[in-house]
Image (cartoon, rainbow, N blue to C red; front, side, top):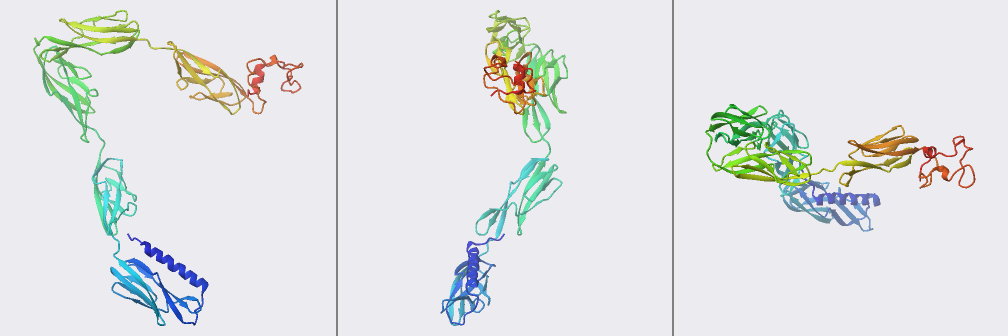
Amino acid sequence: MKKIGSWGAASLFLVSLISAVIIGCNTETTPLGVESILVVPVNTSLQVGETQQYMAIGAYSDGSTANVTGNATWESSDSETASIDSLGLVRAKSEGEVTITASLDGISASAVLTTVAAVVLESISLEPQGASILVEATQQYTAAGNYSDGSTATITEDVTWTSSNETVATIDAAGLATALAEGTTTIGAALEGVSDSATLTVIGPVVLESILVEPQDESTPVDRTQQFTATGTYTDESTADITGDVTWASSNETVATIDADGLVTVQAEGTADITAALEGVSGSATLTGLPPSTAPLESIAVTPAGASVEVGQNQQYTATGTYTDDGTAVITGDVTWASSNETVATIDAAGLATVLSEGTTNITATLDEISGLTALTGVVVATLESITVTPADASIGEGETQQYTATGTYSDSSEQDLTADVTWDSSDTGVATIDSAGLATAVSAGTSTITATLGEVSDSAEITVTAAGAPNIPAGHLSAGCDACHSTGAGAPQWPTADPDHSGFTSSLDFCTGCHDQS
């Protein structure tokens, strides 16, 4: 990649400008003697290998000027650093500084030229290194060029990109790699004989590879429980707790049973394999049933803790005993259940509580003088009692819209905006339609009923669509019949009975709003 110096660009501009001035002002060579010469550019800098056109401008005794580049004798003070031909074209050959001189008729002038080493691309830095992506995923690569003058530049779109294995991944001209299949490929970036590369690994979809069931070798007394867990290991080496996702099984249910959450209950002495399976992958552990333990009961835990239940609903409780040998057992059917406030909730011998009213009670489980308890709160869930649709009566012109809202009133006297929750309906979609957000659109003149429904509760409103161009009814007049003020007699404006469309009408609010809007 070649970099153009600011001096070189400026010099080319200056030479072009001076040439234009000379050509425009003095197109004939004067026979008068040259008094002075100007060499341009006066001072410039070139990279080794670059060229520069010099110009000699002669000034004459009559004040005129002329381009004498082709007449002058050109000379470089060091032709090994920079050479110049008879037409003033300089070529930089090595680093250094030279004086460029133009002579004519014993008159000469000079300019200084500095030559510098060419800025070349030395290396490319490709990023990212060692990327891993899934099949069908993409990876953007970037290339940075490092130059001989210490500068850097982004050359992502200048380099040539390659993939060593295009069955694994391809890469486009902008450095975007697309994964096609599992495997490894080398991504390369090259420019001006310089290159860099990076390894791209494409991996297949992340799937479950193995399951670890813990504890691996457990011994538990009869009538006790043991919680098992399942940990999944995936193809990307990640792990996850999948205890609640696997299917649990016991190879010998006379020895031990296991529920969907991985909780084992030991039924008899013996051995059983406990297995967890998911997506065709399984893992197992061994459980040994020991003779019943004589360790005394130490504590009882009642679950769920701190439940809030709607009045009229039930809640199942579980009692888990912990023994002095650290063993545990579900003892729901063995304990004595009690509620401290039976006006709030009662509980039966199987731990099923029934909530009767608002309030709080303590649910207690007792066995061998050991107790555990938790609070149960009875709550009343407010129910929707009514819906109010607003506006109740609306009149709009054809093509206009009207936003409706639905407000729900609940049994606890609270209110809630239900506009987005209700189902909206128009009784006559030829007159007006309404969308799920409650926005009605007038279609043609007439009247339709707009209804909002949620569950078994609903409310309605009337919408009147007036024909385009009919005069508006003054605000506030729709609440009274038109004939309250208008008649065929004196007073307010009379019915326009002479109009064929109005002939025979002496009073009709419905008729008026069929054509006239309310302002």
